[in-house]
Each structure stands twice: as structure tokens, then as C-alpha cells.
Image 1 (tube, rainbow, N blue to C red):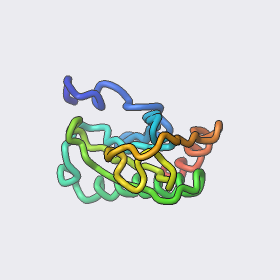
Image 2: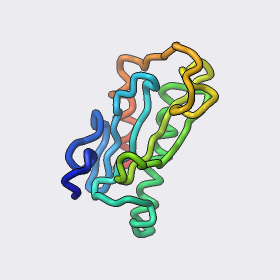
Image 3: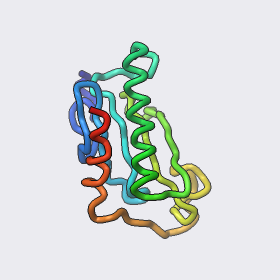
Image 4: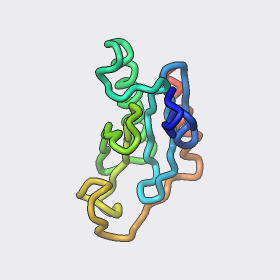
Length: 136
């Protein structure tokens, strides 16, 4: 645990699934609704800080999020990224993308091209949580 790390000191969003190794949260990103984050519970900086089994578990969670978002939201594309430049705590962003989202086709941190923002279904958190139970 790192006392200065926001992902050590908080969930990082609404928790949709959690086990001893990681958690999956909906951070409530208003420009990209439906974005999920896979956050490793223990404070590590990089994937190579994990052993092979933990890396496999982390990637399984990331790819499960991708599958769930494709099933629930039917986006045009999914972006997956592990950046951690601002918060150097291992976490992955799984972002549903649409041709009419604010930044498409650029990355979500690219220049804003339009003001349209989609919502998610009212039962999004429940549907995602139910589908993520397969991780257990």
C-alpha cells in the first residue's frame, strides 16, 4: 500500500466486481460512459511486477471486461490501455468507443471533435456485474 496513491486509498469508482487480487470498477467517466477499470489491489507499478499467474489473472479480467462491454453496449470498438502515468498503480482502462463519441477516431485524450455523449442503459451496472461473476 502506498499512502499517497488514490487507488490504494479508494476504490477508484463504483465497484462492480472484486476478489483478493483485483477489482473492476465503473469510474463514471462522463465523456466515455461505460468505461471500466481493472485495478490490481496490491500497489505495483507494472505488469512485470506480477508473477506469471497474476499477470494471467489480470489479463483475464481485462478481456472479460472487453467481452462484457461488447455484449452489453455493442460499441463500434473497444480501447484497452494500461497507462498509469498520473497514478502509477497497475490498472487497465477498458473503453467502449463509438463513431460519434466526443473524440473518435482519436484516443480519448485526443482533441474533442464533437459534443455528443451516449449514455448507458439504466441497468448497466447490474448487467455488467452479473456477467463478471464468471471471474469467480
